[in-house]
Image 1 (spheres, rainbow, N blue to C red):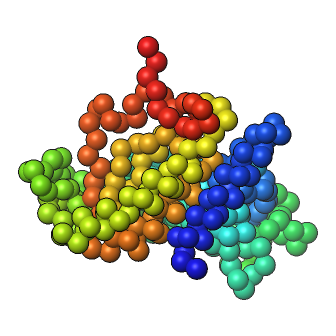
Image 2: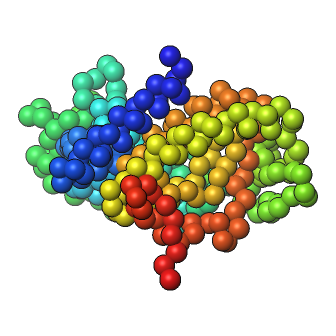
Image 3: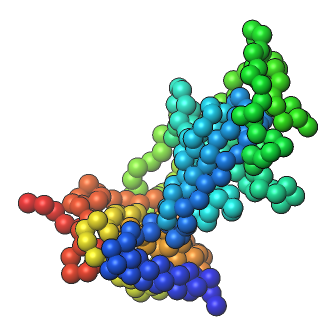
Length: 314
C-alpha cells in the first residue's frame, strides 16, 4: 500500500473518532490521539543547574510543558507520538535568541533521554550551533537530586553535574552559549515575480527564486487536484464552529492560501497531502504562497451544514 494512501486511511479514522467524541460530549483530539502522561526526571548536564523537572504531555494533544527546578530547559514544547518517542522544547531568550532542544530516548539506558539544545536568532535559519547537552534520567531511590545536600558554591563557580555521581558539584561556568550568525539575516528576498514565474525554493541561497516551472510540473499539478479536493472535503467535517480552523497547505505540488478545515484533522491532512504530492509532483519545485490580503484567512472559520467554511461577519 502506498504511504499516502495509508495516511489517508488514518485521516478517515481520526475524523471518525473525533465525530464520535463530539456526539458523546467529549473533546476532539488535536494531535495523534495521544494519552496524557508525565515523567519526573533528574536533569544533569551543561544547560543549567542540575535539578528535577516534570515533563507533561496533555491529554490528546501535542503540547508538552516542563515544571520544576530552573535547569536551563525551555518550559514548553511538542511531542507527536508520546513522550516515549521523544519530544522537543522551544523557548525565547534575551536579545532575540531562540533555544530549541530535542530529547531522544536512549536505547541502552532505561527511561533515559539525551537532550541537545541549539540556538539561533529569531526569524533566522535553523542552526547547527550546539548550545548545550543534558541527560534526563528517572528519579529513583538511588538518585533523586531533591535529596542532595544544599550546595553553596564560592563566587565564580556554579553547581553542575559530575560524571558518575548523582549530586552536583561546584565548577567554573562555561560562559554564554554561542549565538550563530545567520548569513541570511540581511538578505532582501524578492516578494513577487514577473508574469509566468513563481517564487520557488531551489535549495541554493537564502531566498526563493523567480523560476518558470516545467511543463511536466503543470501536468502533475493538474493530476494532483482531485486528490487535494477529496482530502480537503474529508477534512472539513464538523459539528460546531469550535471544530474549525484555518490552515495553510504547503506541498511540492504547490502552496495554498489558508483554507478552513477541522482542527482535529490538521496534522493528518498535512501529512496525507505531503506524501501524495511528493509522489505526484516530482518535477515541481516547492513554491512560496502568494496570497492577497483578501485571500489570507478571510473572515473566520465556521461550521455550516456539517462542513468548515470561512465566513465574513456583517
